[in-house]
Image (cartoon, rainbow, N blue to C red; front, side):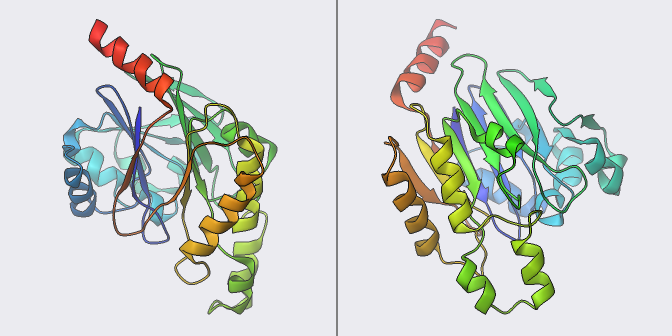
Length: 271
């Protein structure tokens, strides 16, 4: 398993998960030209993507999904509510999935979890390798660590987790009070503090990477986000790495711990 964050933030989001020859994209919040450039920068042809799952209908997560599916033949998946409110998804062959449903792809099982965000039926996604059991979790755009969000983040090998804003910077930032209230609400976005608490609860022996995503351009700082996460995880048994996703460039690859990777390598050789 390999995970690449192709870009994350309010201007677009996309996470690539590779398991053997299977490639799955979580969200496509960029136009086709941008997503093609990001993929080719890591040596991946856009047409090699098997599927894309859209977490919710906000443009920074869904903008390019339908056009990319038409252009490169991707299979598209989204929650029933997301398809109902995003017309472009209804114009292509987008498979509606129920929240909590699992979908089996070539070498990956994709499972959806409800997350609390101000969208129609938003989801987080777990992608699990059918050969090694390693799992990558993408959990962004949530206002608080609900029971379902905690279940999503539990037992991940690679955790891509929102760390959107610093609470002090949000209060002192450029947004009007109504927008500040929305971001800080229980259906808004996770603060650095809340993200650190959720990650600390999610530590397990296989957790190799925590990647901080959807960082606010105006109400956060990469150093503050990284420090809050690092300090929280220092008091746990976590022995992996913490990294920060970027808006305008690719970050990765992130791999499971060596025992998982060796199992996958041996399986590939056996084939």
